[in-house]
Amino acid sequence: MNIANWLYQTALSWPSRPALYEGDSLRQTYHALLQATCDRAAWMQAVHGIEKGDRVAIFAKNTPEYIELLHACWWLGAVVVPVNCKLHPREAEWIIRDSGAALTLTESGRVFADRPDIREVALGSPVAGTKEIVPPARVGDRDLAWLFYTSGTTGTPKGVMLSHDNLRHMTLCYALDVDTARPEDHMLYAAPMSHGAGLYMFAQIRAGGAHLVPASHGFDSDEIIALAKTRGNLVFFAAPTMVKRLIATAKQQGHDGTGFRTIIYGGGPMYAHDIDEALACFGPRFVQIYGQGETPMTISVLPRDLVADQSHPRWRARRASVGIAQGAVTLAVLGPDGTALPPGHTGEICVQGPTVMTGYWRNEAASAQALQDGWLRTGDLGHLDEDGFLYLTDRSKDVIISGGTNIYPREVEEALLAHPAVFEIAVIGEPEPDWGEQVVAYIVFEPGKSASVPELDSWCRQQIAAFKRPKRYLFVEELPKNSYGKVLKSDLRSGKGAATATA
Image 1 (cartoon, rainbow, N blue to C red):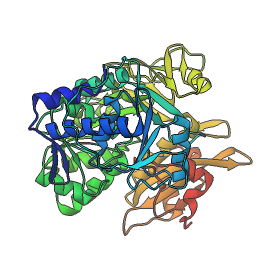
Image 2: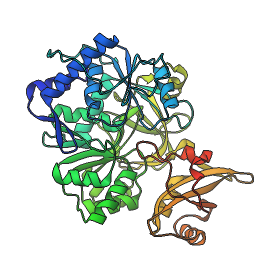
Image 3: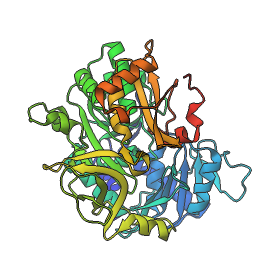
Image 4: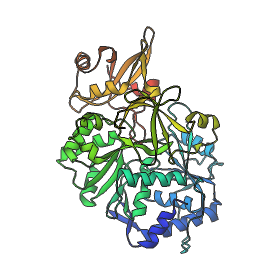
């Protein structure tokens, strides 16, 4: 089944429902969105020759046209290649060429003007209205729909192949485990639509609810709070750093969360101090999900009642977990030999289920490494407790080995983030001749606050074992992040994030 069928049926059933807002302005009803999608698909086919199976790259910030363009591709049976808008054009060019994109849509239509072999057009290019409404092309469940390129933090980016069936089961997991989509809701796109935030549109489309692109086309705390007041019933995905900044702004304004219905967080570690503060400010509006591009948004979930719960004897530990397996997947923690580890033992988090990618684009070696014996090997480390709650330790590549002992950066980060002067933190390992590696902490202070190295060192000694504490502290104005707000530890390791270090 073509995933675009949901838009087709919703638009025929409820044509006058609001479909798309830009800020507070209504841009399209569902009938208008359907018509624009059909017109755009006809234009892609007639003018640019796009056919079933062709790849179409979108290299742009969030725009009102994004949902229309995605569906226009699927209407033809083509494949979307969503490119992170914060990439350098050279990096985007690599993805466009690797995917073999037949067409590239950008905001200006001039990003690759000096590359005549790249067919590029502006995503807002005018098209002639056909006035003809046609159903989406027939495709197979396993046909490719979404070709998502990984961040490439460990080397060349890999193209994650997601089928129409993958996207359908991801959406069913959302409806079953994460949140109930409602016609009166507004799905807000503050995080990049080229990533998981864009994938969450399907449940909203099926429910006939509205989609809301901020006028800024990005994340702005003041703007989002204003939209919560005017539009209400906001539902959106946010990285933990986005939640942290939203709560800081809300506290400054004295806003209690009115107008926000559900905030889904994931994509990086949400520290205990931060979620406690968010709950105290906004109440039980938060749901945590854990996933990765290879099984999009669908490894585990901590529903809102468990995020907010304080009645269970282990509620504090559970809140620090990433929840339980989502409904369509099987979850296991495996040892190096591939056997399942008992509760409490750290190993690699592995997943089976219909949300797992079909493989990496034209990369059989990487596919074979990631997909072993029916499991997706995520590369993340963690453990399960006796009740099936999953606890993340770290990415396997982030573990610091000092003197033969494993040190998990998240544990050090949690300890330091509890200090009242610390706003954000990232801990990495750096080479050290005697011990192999040593712990280094990059720290962003709360506005108007600071702390000395001896004070922070003393604080760590009170929180964690002495051998885990940082051997170096670097104070920076901000941490390097990707478009999703996830800290780029690879940049810190390479020295890119140390430019603003003060001591």
